[in-house]
Image 1 (cartoon, rainbow, N blue to C red):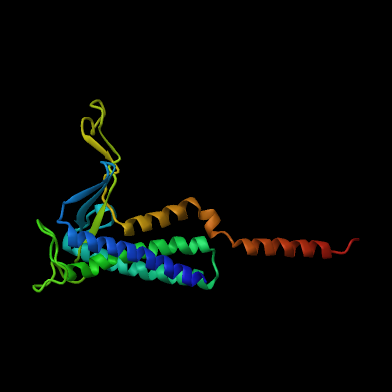
Image 2 (image 1 turned 180 degrees about the vertical axis):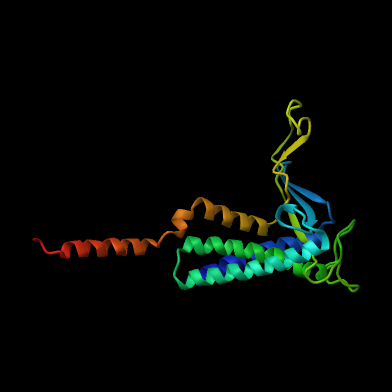
Length: 221
Protein backbone atom coordinates (compact mmCIF):
# COMPACT_ATOMS: atom_id res chain seq x y z
CA UNK A 1 0.00 0.00 0.00
CA UNK A 2 2.83 2.40 0.88
CA UNK A 3 4.55 1.62 -2.41
CA UNK A 4 1.38 2.40 -4.38
CA UNK A 5 0.96 5.74 -2.57
CA UNK A 6 4.58 6.64 -3.23
CA UNK A 7 4.41 5.71 -6.91
CA UNK A 8 1.13 7.60 -7.35
CA UNK A 9 2.62 10.72 -5.75
CA UNK A 10 5.69 10.61 -7.98
CA UNK A 11 3.59 9.95 -11.09
CA UNK A 12 1.13 12.80 -10.47
CA UNK A 13 3.86 15.35 -9.71
CA UNK A 14 5.84 14.33 -12.81
CA UNK A 15 2.72 14.38 -14.98
CA UNK A 16 1.74 17.91 -13.92
CA UNK A 17 5.34 19.14 -14.13
CA UNK A 18 6.04 17.79 -17.61
CA UNK A 19 2.66 18.72 -19.11
CA UNK A 20 3.09 22.33 -18.01
CA UNK A 21 6.71 22.48 -19.22
CA UNK A 22 5.77 20.98 -22.59
CA UNK A 23 2.95 23.50 -22.99
CA UNK A 24 5.25 26.40 -22.10
CA UNK A 25 7.94 25.27 -24.56
CA UNK A 26 5.46 24.85 -27.42
CA UNK A 27 3.37 27.98 -26.84
CA UNK A 28 5.68 30.74 -25.57
CA UNK A 29 8.97 32.23 -26.70
CA UNK A 30 11.65 32.81 -24.09
CA UNK A 31 10.75 35.82 -21.96
CA UNK A 32 7.05 35.88 -22.85
CA UNK A 33 4.58 35.89 -20.00
CA UNK A 34 0.88 35.55 -19.23
CA UNK A 35 -0.66 37.44 -16.28
CA UNK A 36 -2.83 35.04 -14.27
CA UNK A 37 -3.73 37.03 -11.17
CA UNK A 38 -2.85 40.65 -11.89
CA UNK A 39 0.78 41.38 -11.07
CA UNK A 40 0.79 38.87 -8.22
CA UNK A 41 0.94 35.66 -10.24
CA UNK A 42 2.49 35.55 -13.72
CA UNK A 43 3.38 32.66 -16.00
CA UNK A 44 6.79 33.85 -17.18
CA UNK A 45 8.83 31.57 -19.45
CA UNK A 46 12.50 31.37 -18.60
CA UNK A 47 15.17 28.68 -18.70
CA UNK A 48 18.23 28.05 -16.57
CA UNK A 49 21.32 25.87 -16.87
CA UNK A 50 21.82 25.48 -13.16
CA UNK A 51 20.08 24.72 -9.93
CA UNK A 52 16.56 25.31 -8.66
CA UNK A 53 14.95 28.77 -8.75
CA UNK A 54 17.16 29.95 -11.63
CA UNK A 55 20.54 29.80 -9.89
CA UNK A 56 23.57 29.15 -12.11
CA UNK A 57 26.63 27.01 -11.52
CA UNK A 58 29.94 26.78 -13.36
CA UNK A 59 29.17 26.96 -17.08
CA UNK A 60 29.13 23.85 -19.30
CA UNK A 61 31.25 21.74 -16.95
CA UNK A 62 29.18 22.84 -13.97
CA UNK A 63 26.02 21.92 -15.88
CA UNK A 64 27.33 18.41 -16.55
CA UNK A 65 28.41 18.05 -12.92
CA UNK A 66 24.98 19.15 -11.66
CA UNK A 67 23.20 16.75 -14.01
CA UNK A 68 25.31 13.81 -12.84
CA UNK A 69 24.92 14.89 -9.22
CA UNK A 70 21.13 15.02 -9.63
CA UNK A 71 21.09 11.52 -11.07
CA UNK A 72 23.20 10.20 -8.19
CA UNK A 73 21.00 12.01 -5.67
CA UNK A 74 17.87 10.50 -7.20
CA UNK A 75 19.42 7.05 -6.84
CA UNK A 76 20.17 7.65 -3.16
CA UNK A 77 16.70 9.07 -2.45
CA UNK A 78 15.00 6.20 -4.28
CA UNK A 79 17.03 3.63 -2.34
CA UNK A 80 16.25 5.30 1.00
CA UNK A 81 12.57 5.60 0.09
CA UNK A 82 12.41 1.91 -0.82
CA UNK A 83 14.08 1.06 2.51
CA UNK A 84 11.46 3.07 4.42
CA UNK A 85 8.63 1.42 2.50
CA UNK A 86 9.96 -2.05 3.31
CA UNK A 87 10.18 -1.07 6.98
CA UNK A 88 6.56 0.15 6.89
CA UNK A 89 7.52 3.72 7.83
CA UNK A 90 4.98 6.46 8.41
CA UNK A 91 2.90 7.32 5.37
CA UNK A 92 3.57 11.04 5.79
CA UNK A 93 7.35 10.46 5.72
CA UNK A 94 7.10 8.33 2.59
CA UNK A 95 4.94 10.95 0.85
CA UNK A 96 7.39 13.76 1.74
CA UNK A 97 10.30 11.83 0.27
CA UNK A 98 8.18 10.94 -2.76
CA UNK A 99 7.62 14.67 -3.38
CA UNK A 100 11.38 15.27 -3.21
CA UNK A 101 12.10 12.33 -5.52
CA UNK A 102 9.48 13.43 -8.05
CA UNK A 103 10.81 16.99 -8.14
CA UNK A 104 14.38 15.82 -8.64
CA UNK A 105 13.34 13.50 -11.47
CA UNK A 106 11.29 16.26 -13.08
CA UNK A 107 14.27 18.59 -13.39
CA UNK A 108 16.55 15.73 -14.47
CA UNK A 109 14.23 15.09 -17.43
CA UNK A 110 14.74 18.70 -18.55
CA UNK A 111 18.50 18.57 -18.09
CA UNK A 112 18.95 15.19 -19.73
CA UNK A 113 16.45 15.28 -22.60
CA UNK A 114 15.07 18.73 -23.45
CA UNK A 115 18.20 19.78 -25.34
CA UNK A 116 17.67 16.86 -27.72
CA UNK A 117 13.87 17.15 -27.95
CA UNK A 118 13.35 20.88 -28.58
CA UNK A 119 14.81 23.65 -30.70
CA UNK A 120 15.80 26.82 -28.86
CA UNK A 121 13.17 29.32 -27.72
CA UNK A 122 14.94 32.59 -28.58
CA UNK A 123 12.49 35.01 -30.26
CA UNK A 124 10.17 32.19 -31.33
CA UNK A 125 8.23 29.22 -29.99
CA UNK A 126 10.32 26.05 -29.76
CA UNK A 127 9.71 23.15 -32.11
CA UNK A 128 9.31 19.65 -30.69
CA UNK A 129 11.57 17.06 -32.34
CA UNK A 130 13.03 19.47 -34.95
CA UNK A 131 14.50 17.92 -38.12
CA UNK A 132 17.84 19.67 -37.62
CA UNK A 133 18.12 18.37 -34.07
CA UNK A 134 17.68 19.97 -30.67
CA UNK A 135 19.50 22.92 -29.14
CA UNK A 136 21.76 20.76 -26.94
CA UNK A 137 23.15 17.33 -26.21
CA UNK A 138 22.38 14.71 -23.59
CA UNK A 139 22.66 16.11 -20.03
CA UNK A 140 23.06 19.65 -21.38
CA UNK A 141 19.41 20.66 -21.59
CA UNK A 142 17.97 23.67 -19.79
CA UNK A 143 15.41 23.51 -16.99
CA UNK A 144 12.11 25.19 -17.86
CA UNK A 145 10.74 27.62 -15.25
CA UNK A 146 7.50 29.56 -15.41
CA UNK A 147 5.88 30.26 -12.02
CA UNK A 148 6.48 33.85 -10.92
CA UNK A 149 4.92 35.45 -7.83
CA UNK A 150 6.11 39.09 -7.50
CA UNK A 151 3.62 39.72 -4.68
CA UNK A 152 5.59 42.61 -3.15
CA UNK A 153 7.26 45.17 -5.42
CA UNK A 154 8.81 48.18 -3.74
CA UNK A 155 12.09 50.07 -3.25
CA UNK A 156 14.50 49.74 -0.35
CA UNK A 157 14.71 52.92 1.80
CA UNK A 158 17.51 55.25 0.63
CA UNK A 159 19.13 55.24 4.08
CA UNK A 160 19.65 51.46 4.05
CA UNK A 161 23.32 50.46 3.48
CA UNK A 162 24.19 48.56 0.26
CA UNK A 163 20.56 48.12 -0.92
CA UNK A 164 19.25 51.66 -0.42
CA UNK A 165 17.21 52.88 -3.39
CA UNK A 166 17.30 49.51 -5.16
CA UNK A 167 14.21 47.63 -6.31
CA UNK A 168 12.90 44.89 -4.02
CA UNK A 169 10.67 42.09 -5.29
CA UNK A 170 9.25 39.24 -3.24
CA UNK A 171 9.16 36.53 -4.47
CA UNK A 172 11.75 37.19 -7.22
CA UNK A 173 12.87 33.70 -8.39
CA UNK A 174 10.93 31.99 -11.19
CA UNK A 175 10.41 28.29 -10.55
CA UNK A 176 8.48 25.22 -11.68
CA UNK A 177 6.32 22.46 -10.22
CA UNK A 178 9.34 20.21 -9.67
CA UNK A 179 11.05 22.93 -7.59
CA UNK A 180 7.85 23.37 -5.59
CA UNK A 181 7.59 19.63 -4.98
CA UNK A 182 11.14 19.50 -3.62
CA UNK A 183 10.56 22.56 -1.43
CA UNK A 184 7.30 21.20 0.02
CA UNK A 185 8.95 17.88 0.85
CA UNK A 186 12.08 19.40 2.41
CA UNK A 187 10.24 22.09 4.43
CA UNK A 188 7.77 19.53 5.77
CA UNK A 189 10.61 17.21 6.81
CA UNK A 190 12.32 20.07 8.65
CA UNK A 191 9.21 21.36 10.41
CA UNK A 192 7.81 17.96 11.36
CA UNK A 193 11.00 15.94 11.72
CA UNK A 194 10.26 14.70 15.24
CA UNK A 195 6.80 13.50 14.25
CA UNK A 196 7.86 12.04 10.90
CA UNK A 197 10.99 10.24 12.03
CA UNK A 198 9.54 8.98 15.32
CA UNK A 199 8.26 5.41 15.65
CA UNK A 200 4.90 4.67 14.01
CA UNK A 201 1.94 5.24 16.32
CA UNK A 202 0.95 1.59 16.34
CA UNK A 203 4.42 0.70 17.58
CA UNK A 204 4.15 3.22 20.39
CA UNK A 205 0.72 1.93 21.36
CA UNK A 206 2.02 -1.64 21.22
CA UNK A 207 4.97 -0.79 23.44
CA UNK A 208 2.72 0.90 25.98
CA UNK A 209 0.37 -2.07 26.03
CA UNK A 210 3.30 -4.47 26.45
CA UNK A 211 4.69 -2.38 29.30
CA UNK A 212 1.26 -2.40 30.95
CA UNK A 213 1.01 -6.19 30.67
CA UNK A 214 4.52 -6.62 32.05
CA UNK A 215 3.80 -4.32 34.99
CA UNK A 216 0.58 -6.18 35.80
CA UNK A 217 2.37 -9.53 35.68
CA UNK A 218 4.93 -8.60 38.34
CA UNK A 219 3.98 -10.61 41.46
CA UNK A 220 3.33 -8.69 44.62
CA UNK A 221 5.73 -9.27 47.52
